[in-house]
Length: 301
Image 1 (cartoon, helix red, strand yellow):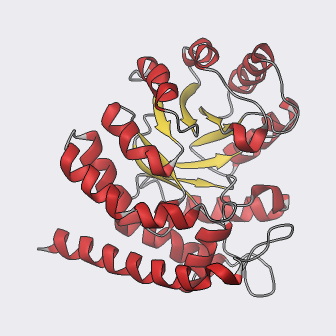
Image 2 (tube, rainbow, N blue to C red):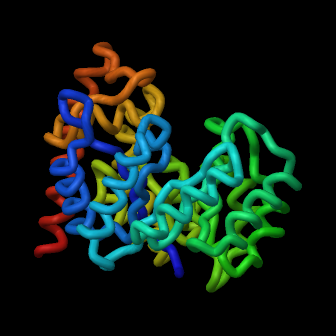
C-alpha cells in the first residue's frame, strides 16, 4: 500500500438526538469522493473515536467500506493505550474491510521510546492490517521521535507515519525515511503545504472535511513542486486554518459541517462551538463554499 496526497480524517456526524447519522455520513463520503480525496480515515481523533461505542465504530467503518467500494483506501483508527486492545481493534477493523490502520501513540500512559517500538512491532507482527504510525504529542502526552520511527520504518507491515508536529525540523528528520514502502504524511493542516513542498507524500487533514477540493488541489500542486501556485492557494486557506484552531478539534470543523447540512453537534465532554465564534463560522463557511465552487468551475473549464 502506498498512501499519498489528500487524505481526510473524517468527522463523525450525529443526529440532533445524538445518534449516528449514517445518511449524513454517506453524504460526507460522497463529497470526498467527488472532490478527489485520495483516502479517508474512519474513527480517528477528528471522528471522536473516544466517544464511539464499538457497535457505532463498526457501523461507520462497514458503511464507509461499502460506500467507497475500493475506489480509495479506507483507514481505521485503532490505537488504544493498551497494546492488546490495539491489536484487538485492528483485527476488528480488518474483518470489517479496512485497508489499513492508523495507530496513534498510546494516549496518557506515556511509554518510553523502547516501549513504543515494542508496541508498534507487536501490532504490526500480528499482521491484521498495514499500520500507519500516528504521532500527535499534544493529545497523547508522548512523542514518537524520528530515530524511533527509523527503527520501525523497515517493518514490512508499517507503511507510513502521520506526523502532527508542526516544526520544520521534525519533517526534515523524517523525510529521509521515505521509500516506496513507507510514506511520510503531514498531520498538521497549516504546515502541510510546506511539508509537501519539502517532499512529504501527502497530508491527513481535518480541513479537508470541508475543503476537499482545495486540499486535493493543494496536495497536487505541492507534490508536483509548483511552489508559487501551492503557496498562493495555501494563503487563501489561512483564514480557515485559523478558525479550525479557535477551539479543540473537532469542534470548529463540525460547526462548519453543520452549516453545510452534515450532522449536529458533538458528544460530551465536547461542547458545540462557543457563540462568540458563530459569526466567524458563518463567514468562513460562505468563503469555503465559494472557493470550492471556483475550483470545480476551473476544473470544468
